[in-house]
Length: 74
Image (cartoon, rainbow, N blue to C red; front, side, top):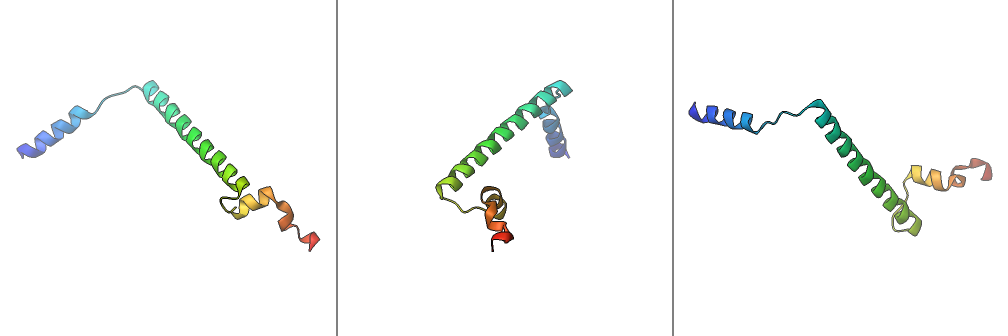
């Protein structure tokens, strides 16, 4: 029992109370970092597609070359 009590005390000691404002500021920062990371990945993907290094998926093909899906030309 002594080990479990020490473990519980140790866990409680590592918890830090933060205010809602602190949490929201942290959350906004994390969301901004995630958005920046996703935007950078999207930009790099667009560059790779433009240079021909990677294949386009169906959605990208439709956005970049919609004439491929035009049945009127066939």
